[in-house]
Length: 389
Image (tube, rainbow, N blue to C red; front, side, top):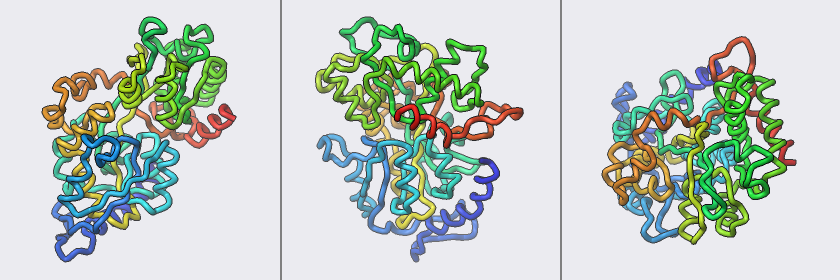
């Protein structure tokens, strides 16, 4: 992966900087990338995003951080909802979209495929206020070169029916055949969920030696798949669309599951008797990155969008709506709920030390081992498809 991405950097960075200047007579390029300035917007920007990330008031009139962007920049926002990281990668490979809100299980694939370009953070003034704990991470940069701006972060939580018993505390309840929730368990339908099985094994089978749920050698990987095969007998729902799990929670047909806070928020608003918690063994999670296509047709508007979505006010709004920690440190003073950042541990690096952010598995083991090869993401996909067949 390092060899591939290093080779991409030179050409992709050139594309990014040409795009950033946009060919406008108002653009300036002195030969120093830090001195480059954006030209005028191209009139529109085409985005691929998770549901809830690009709201223009059509879902809820009070939830809108798009209209002001369009008014200020003249860039009309067109958004395609990506229902999974795999779908987002496919959409970005088409070359029809300018930017994407990519999770860590998509970012490295997009970088390696040359589908996204490095970004010049000097063209994104609000980047200066992003929490340092989110900058220059393995899922949003390569060899010190940034490939996007952090949007926000959160853990994949356990959601449970409050009338079905006490709050669960362990991931074991998601995997044990003796789980009191057997037959009413909801699981995220994605190959990256194999990492959740790895966390379960880290707690219950330490002799396997798993130290990173995204770095599994063949023996460790086979054990994770075996755990998932056993889990199938107690699962009632595999969800890919967030609305599917929301409906199941509201109907009471699911009493335990892996979830996103936004699903809990929406279902609770509709009367579902549920709550969420973080299991004691730690959890998988996400730190999403807005990235610009290497083939962007509207690069100036894309840069403007990246700056806008991490601006304090917009970032505070999306963080509250979606249910996540904002990426901009100044957003915490602007949330409607003054306790939002404390609730979501926005600046609590100790909390996020127990969260394994989604990352693309590669043959080079991400835990530092060099004496074995790890199972790459392509094999995670194959195994998951076989499991779900």
